[in-house]
Image (cartoon, rainbow, N blue to C red; front, top):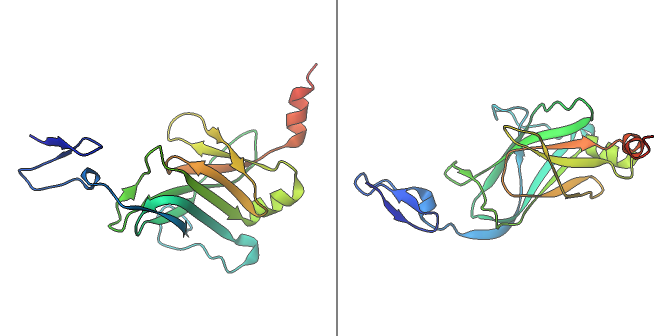
Length: 178
């Protein structure tokens, strides 16, 4: 039998001397980290940022565990009625390579900068929308800000995030239906 302890009421197996890391509070410090961006889900080849027209930069800022690092890779998200500019699966890892998920009370900001986003920003006044893409269900729009070269948003957890183009003409047509 396990014994309940800690804020998360996790179970530590005393007989086998196995302790879940979540039984112990983690030291969190404010950090600004840049994700390692890979070419695909195998995370074996880093994205090549040497060409200016293919630059990708993903930054995560907030209260995070010491020595945390981030990995991201592009994913295909199909949206029949909107242009998907980019979509990335973003994951945070502790120093021991276990996945870190922040609790809901942590303010963590994610910034995504790509050449496609920068081009879209130059072409439109309200250029993009950011969505959290759950494993099941419909994408959920997030409140975001749009700096010059990308977009930033608050993340409560890490998973797939998608940035879609906003078609100003389609939005105005919806408002002018007879």
